[in-house]
Length: 245
Image (cartoon, rainbow, N blue to C red; front, side, top):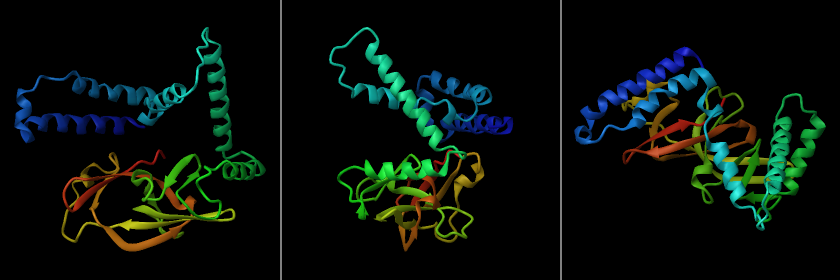
């Protein structure tokens, strides 16, 4: 995060707010919302705390969801909370250590064996899989979960730019796993991408809403991240890079 990026955020938000009543005249009759004022203060938080992913509430909401599923058996007094907190902290620190670049290779190999040993029983060790966990991220084939099948990936080892696609198959053989990914079709020639004016501050691009006939077989390490996909017209879709890098 830099001052220039935070300032650009304010500029884009200001343009959006000023154009709200122009492009949506009915909004003039609406009561002014404090959320718009609050959104401008995100600029201050960006400078104080860095990228939004560093301080948003999703991790805490995930912990709350985890705690809600625990059978408390009517225990009170803080004992159960203390046990859960310590267990969660130990697990988080272990996962963080396993992702460090200086983690011993032998430990990383044991982690791969451990992950396979405790894979969901519905998935076969060899052959087609419904989902696969790689570096803490869950990927699914499109027939199981559309959102988790959407990825940005490098179609070959020599590719310099990732492209969007949808995972159609996940196949494992021994310790090797590969993904078969169908490419998202690009915009037809002559159509413009309105999101280019915001790139790279807002990592979105417009593609065709259709898929190509081309599929690529890639290793999990060739996937950059998940991506978001939203069809805003019958033949156009916006793809947003969800990489935290």
